[in-house]
Length: 130
Ligand code: FE
Image (cartoon, rainbow, N blue to C red):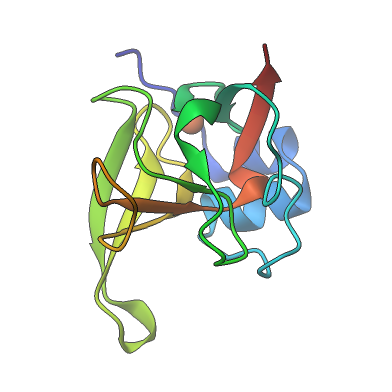
């Protein structure tokens, strides 16, 4: 996979303030405020920073968490994972494999068949509708 690497300054220029805060500084959008939380449109969710394919709308579901939730990434190599022990919790952070954008976290209380819940910020996503 071709990596996309930019300096903090370059990202700041390329992104909105909100996108920069979430994707590059790992902030979290407030629950129930993101534009894709309740979105049921068909399409491919791409990385807001580099357009890498991340999730299909086929695997999106309503988790009730207030953030867009998916039970599976679109490809085996589309995401990167890292341990995150901030805020006194042990969580698995989910990032874009191509540009390291912070996307959200993955939990093990998702639906079948995977049992995974990818809890993702709307700000980190760009839906390409079918
Ligand atoms: Fe990306």
